[in-house]
Length: 144
Image 1 (cartoon, rainbow, N blue to C red):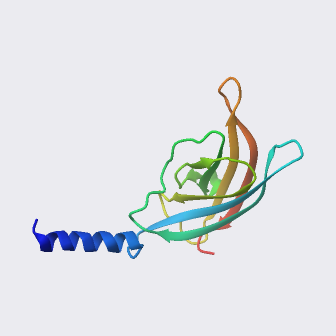
Image 2 (spheres, helix red, strand yellow):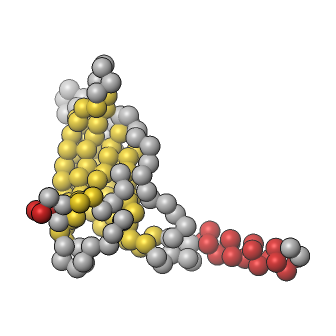
Image 3 (tube, rainbow, N blue to C red):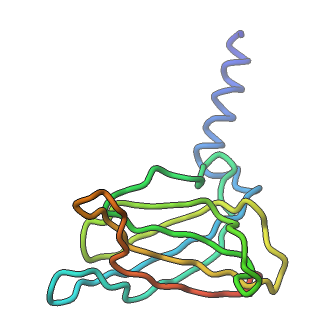
């Protein structure tokens, strides 16, 4: 590859890194505010959910499980025994504060379809079993 070819590749990489290539995939973004009660147990105070278009170069798919962690699952049409439409996402739980999770969609819903975004805070007990410390569900209609 000559100098011109290398310059073209470098130019394309610079454009991609700058975020100019952002068409192609929908993500669900959740901002979760967590507090702790008097005994140090986590409580989900609020969950704000939005949809965004993300760069096709970024991956928001299944991530390794964080323990303890804040987890997000997205369910399409939950009233009909819904199906998971987003990838399993988690971030490490480090105490009270704001957490942001983004999940790529496996399938883009139709306008008006109901989506449940389920947020849980989970840890492992002494025996290695996963336990839920807090849970909240935010429902919205796709396209609203």
